[in-house]
Length: 460
Image 1 (cartoon, rainbow, N blue to C red):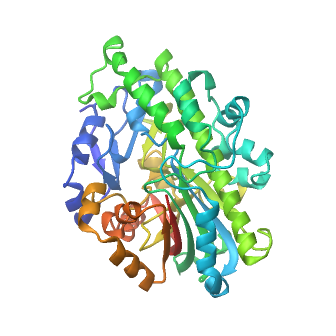
Image 2 (cartoon, helix red, strand yellow):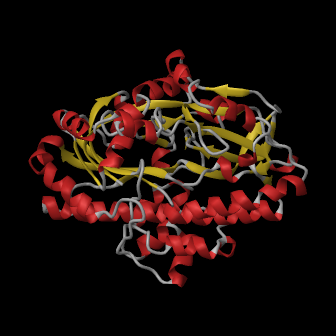
Image 3 (cartoon, helix red, strand yellow):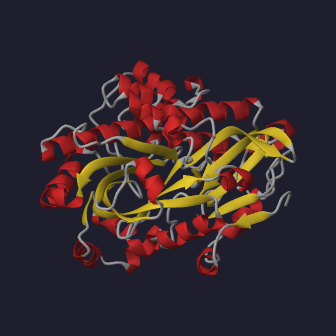
């Protein structure tokens, strides 16, 4: 190992972490050429492709640092956005079922789902370059949405020429679709405030309704990861790179292969931001139709949108020198502290909003980034609850009918494209997000602001 491995966890969560090979993967990542300080993992860590999900690693570009597709994952820029409303729970309660059913009808979801947003080949390349801006320019949102999206909804350096024809084919009909698996659209209510002043800054109060959207780059991003994971295996020999797992195939950031992957990965990141922007637009339209008010009158504005699976070029102080690093966040959230120039003016004093979804039966959280995260974790924190059971194990041990009854007894309405998805995404299949958030809050790498509980859930 070139650097140590650091796991953020408590004793309770550590017992679960020992159950799969995630710890071994933390050690494997510590062998990456150019890795700086440590191979890190957040408390939602679990076994993934090459890197553990919940892993964070930064490599020094000028010191032969590498970029690895396995360090980003297959669902490039899978991420989450949170929308506030000025609606109270009691106000929507009588129409909650109608609202959830209408959202399920209007937002395409499920494996291979296709949306009504169809684009030409020329427009698809525009999406890859402009990201959310393309969506706003085509009527799927407003300019202000871009200000509250990481990278303003489009990371620079995307190169459509580095994307395969197969990836184009898989992505062309999937804009504005939720997807499957752990992707969701959730109507929530704020049930706990932790910092009154910061909640006031966000305009949040108890009983207020929020909407959370979790989705990614669909088949488009998946194909890019598949293409480059295979292609980079030959780079190990070409550049004399020694890694303990071929799933950590990588190339120097400044090599032709490294630059090509980053160009393609940024295309997928921009595709994902445009996708979530379109999903938010469809949600606003649905609320308007069911509640018979404009989305502006309901105060449906974006709080923030963050990426989970991405590699970014960022500068940090390393040993007293400013270094340009390639920061891999795989199943981890950027958590920049107060004063960072990348933040919109509205959040400069308080820090970046960090949105942590849980499972469909428990809670989700809003936190903020801290200076300690900048000092310790390259401005990173956890991204969710983290999987506890495999999808296969969940399917064998959980009864869909009983689960739906249990959720209904808690006042949670669930609509999904299949019973299989419901059991795979059952609360028992995940760690308790409350425990995960406790760890990052107590470690100081992000700070709790408020907690939400689910009212209605749309699953892919």
